[in-house]
Image 1 (cartoon, rainbow, N blue to C red):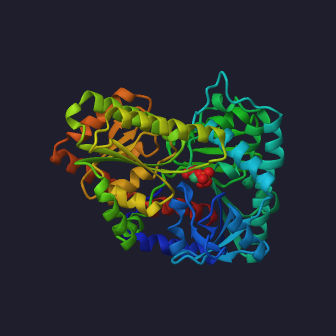
Image 2 (cartoon, rainbow, N blue to C red):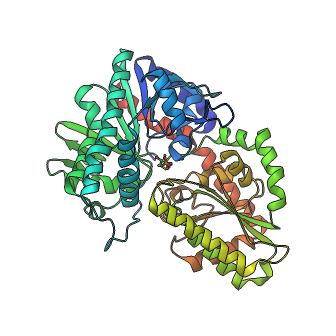
Image 3 (cartoon, rainbow, N blue to C red):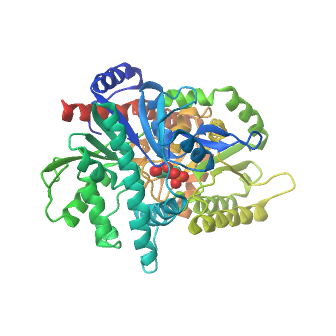
Length: 508
Ligand code: G6P
């Protein structure tokens, strides 16, 4: 990892660096999903704020405890839309306790947002970047995708860029703009046109695939993505594999560029863009506080009757790249092979509904339900059911559940990082075993304590589950200890510090 090491005890150093930077910079952060979302209360019919969900929000929320800044995010539903309309494009102070942040909603027309989110961002870019296509058949880039790019993706990126430019101009200070993830690739280029002196950083939370895979997309889309990103001062990725792949894409798609692989720099049209890996993490103290909160205690009591003598847990968005179906298949194989464990072990899956308007996600949920039904109907007895699923967005319940696992399965097909793999070991109270697929970004750091599996290897995953369930207490303790200390050492503070350290070096 780039930059000096900072432990969570050294937060003071980080926050004085932040103070220093923010004395002469206005921090503006932009991501599709923001730190809070308004839901219409069924009782009062009024918008009620709630914490936003997903990896970006989980990772960045801790920043709102320490720094005052503006976070620009999309309107997610009717509640947000009503609040955004009431405030007519102005930033709103977050009403949530502990969030020192102003949120400015980008209130995109519904039809435009649909094209951006349900046609380009998720089925196209997310699928591409997680190698989720069956390339002889999918994707089929047709006129509807061309249209969704032009009148959905480009439009929303333009709306974000305009909001950023407006916020930056209002502040009168030099802007430090942090743009997040694949939904906003075109923002750095659009902002740079109007704010030549701003410091722009783009951080990508998901993997960057090989150039040959990008080549399935029309040339102008991949070229405009790379060109825009080369307007950032720093492009950050989760892992060194992504840095290498991005440098290679610039080299391949931007003939005018000069790529310095050793230094990790792309020179393009008079600018030098630093390309670096900053493996993201969690706020260890905050996650532990949530795990010990009265609400988590309540869930703990409610969940205990559902546990087996040993309990396997998974926590994921209901998302094809998370490889949930193969996880159940591996459990099924393990139960088949080891009848002595039937009745003693339970698998509790906490699945968050996600992207429910997209056909592939709807189908995947059906496949998950089918896999659970199969295992339950094969092995259930009058007193025991092997799998139980909780299908809801309930972060505190998921954290409470992770206190109680003997085995945590994270077997994503491919994942930028995977924060569940970092949350679990720091809240777990049983020295539980982490089974982790090699293709998650988290594997680079956590292989020291995890049992590694290959994502498609159902047989190997079944064996890993058995090994985890029968591991000696001494080995469990040793592995869990290694996971905890790695995650504590490289928590979110480390991630932020490394980035701000680099910003400081470039802006000094
Ligand atoms: C991942 C992505 C985020 C996204 C989250 C939830 O963590 O990197 O950008 O916000 O998934 O997905 P959603 O589509 O619900 O925002």
